[in-house]
Image 1: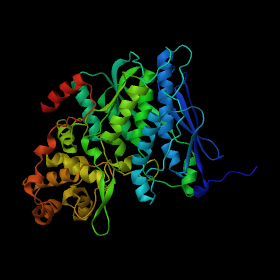
Image 2: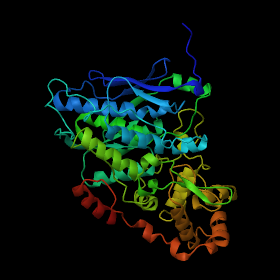
Image 3: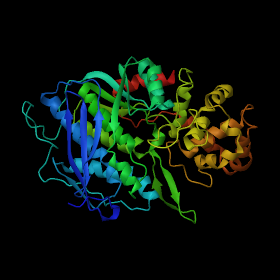
Length: 472
């Protein structure tokens, strides 16, 4: 038999082979393949086993496992983006297929843009006629689930995703202040995230994720590569973990700015579309995924972002209220690459995330404290001008990074031009001299950007408490 070789352009089918979970160990296997190639096995390990699963909870766990299998497949599908998708060990309904097509098409928006691919309307998940619920009820479950998932009687407790940056720490401290029991949760082996999690002093849950090793070989052999909707994958992992632990909330910390992408211009400066690097952090994903979980997995499992009503600047203002994490947090994405170098310090000081977080904190934090966190004053370095121009959407589009809107960056810099301690710094002075005269003063006020938005999925009783907490 001839050994199978990865040939990107010759591949025709991506296969969801099977998935399984061992409740005794908490280890799940997600299995994929291209054409008749070798199995690609991803492993997810949820601490806390053994898990006792029976009845409707067992059905819900199987449902969540399959949803994770389907969403996590994006990491492998993108290597060849073949024409056909095949699901081999279970069937899905039209509602689930529609959700997946939305996640893949939008979540791979930056990937397809950078690789010159057009995936719009080309990703189709197979629907089995007559399937109303993605899996049959096993023995012991309470009959046919029909269109709606049952309430499982989950206990009131939040798995809160922590990423090592300011946003999740704001959520954790808000939930603590509001008396919500929580477990600080993350996926993978980042020591920086672990240090932040331990700094909270709260219970922690570190879920293991091991990608199929062949994926890295395929990348070296010419696979398509690029950004995937990792927040969608992590959301599905934590939904599974929440069910295994019997808790009723999965909480992320994505603010409303995440819903806005980068406006792409042609060579003549005309808008040709929008690409959102952080689409799976945006409202469209949160609302679709959260609703699906309640309809198809467990009616009493709430998935939401605690910070959805806030802008990036509003989150930054909340973060500055405590210095508890100044020496521990980092939003610099170079700390979190799977492969490649990491910065010697927690902040590289030259990437879009470093640029934006420094700028967002500056209007609300003392200059010595902020410079102490970063180890340097990024706004007094003329070499950083191009990076800040992109954040301002001045002669460039918003970076493909998890950063705030251009209007937030412009308002923050405008505020600094009025501060004696900042206005002589190179980039602040340049903004005042060259850029601000081109902008209307009405568009440069911070106050309107700090108003809470009503578009969110936060449980109503918690939302009322949160509003009061944020206003205090």
